[in-house]
Each structure stands twice: as structure tokens, then as C-alpha cells.
Amino acid sequence: MPRLDLASQTVVITGASSGIGVAFARALAARGANVALVARRRARLDELAAALREEHGVTTSAIPLDLSEPSASDDLRAALSDAGVTPTSLINNAGFGTFGPFVGEDPQRLAQMIAVDVSAPVRLSRAFLPDVVAARGFLINVASMAAYTPTPRMAVYGAAKAFTLSFTESLWAETRHTGATVFALSPGATSTEFNAVVGTEDATAGAAMRTPDQVVATAMAHLESRRPGPGVVDGAANRVGATLSRLMSRRLAATMMHRVTDPARRATSGAGAQG
Image (tube, rainbow, N blue to C red; front, side):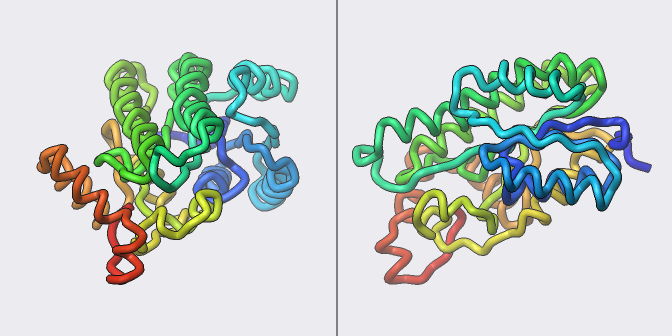
């Protein structure tokens, strides 16, 4: 029997209009959880919310919101209140990256990335963690394999995900005796819209793709395990990579990842590697 009664949960999911966010919404609704779907694209949210209501009979809310705005956490709480939704759990899944040398990056785009990938998870975690603890619910922050090594050509994205991983591990320790479940989920290359947003397949360096459903299955198994730890990595190969990364010097890790993310190397060798 699962450790957590998901049918008693109302889960806020950011980045819920595509990819891993949609897979989380479907998996949770199938287990009886109510869901509040948050993303910028209203039409997609409305369509998914209607489908989940029809298929599973759960309560769903579609909340269009730009998480790059400083007021996003306050706006989300107000929207939930207006909709009569009392959240008990939160999945911070929204995020995006860019690819290319740091000196050529658009400063405004970098600021947006930091707002969505770093500031929003912190603000939303602070806003909703008291509710999660009170309801003995869960907080899942989506990190990445990029959190485990320096990530040349995706320097800000990798640093943001390293922040997410460290931040969430600390929250796990602070809340471990409260009855709430907190952990970071670290996917590797996953068949989502990530590369389309980045603008190149080089962002995942030709790595073999996992599916959003596989990633979410990993998260759900961890969530429902007897003693979930502070983080879980999706995929056996990625788990090996995460372990090995901790044994490398930072110099070696940075040098290796600089080669891995080199588009010229990928074009000439065709070699796949974890991004």
C-alpha cells in the first residue's frame, strides 16, 4: 500500500502545459489527486484540466501565470484562493535553458532564466511549504543532471539546477521529521520541448532520451517509497553518471563537459553523451 494517500492531496504543478509537467498531472490524477495546473499557455492548461476531470473525476484548476514575474508567488496564491483551492503539495517543474558561450548570451534572457529557474522555485517553496507541512504533503523541485557538473555553454542553466539541488536537499533536512516529503528530481535528457525552446539539439549533446512518463514514474516510486531521500536521479545510466561526477575533480569535470557540449565534436564524431 502506498505510504502517501494521494487522493487526499491537491497538487500545484508548474510548467504543466507540456512534457514532465503534463506527465506529473496525468500520473497524479490517475491516483486520485486533485491538481492545479500552472503555466503561461492557457489553452493547453484548459484542455489538460478538462481531460483529467473527464478521465479521472478529480478537481482541476488551470491557472495561466508567468513565473518570471516577481509577484508570481503572490499572484498564484491569490488565484488559488479565488478558485477555492487549498493546496497541499507543490511540484516546481517550470524551467528553461539556453545554449551557447556565456559572453554571447542575451542579458535579458539570462535574467528571465534566473527568475524562472531559481527565484520562482524559492518563492513558491516559501509560499507553500507551510501548507505542505501542515497537510503532510510533498514538495518536489525538478533539478537536472546538469546540477552535478559544471555545464559549459549552458553555464547559467547548470548553475541554476545545482542551486535547486542544494536548496532542496537542505529543505529535505529541515522538514524530514514533519511528515512532509521533500526531494529533488534530476532527469537527464528527456523528450520534451526543452531543445525546441533552447533552439538546438546540441543542448542534450545527442544523449539517449528518456520519456516524461519514465521520469515521472521514477519520481512517483521515490515519493511512495518508505523513506524517500533528498533526491532521486532518473535512469540507470544517469545515476551512474551522478555518482561518478562526485569522484571527479572540478577541473576534470569542467574540462570533460566542455568537450561533451562542443557542437563541433558532436557533428564530427556522432558520439552521444549526457548533457
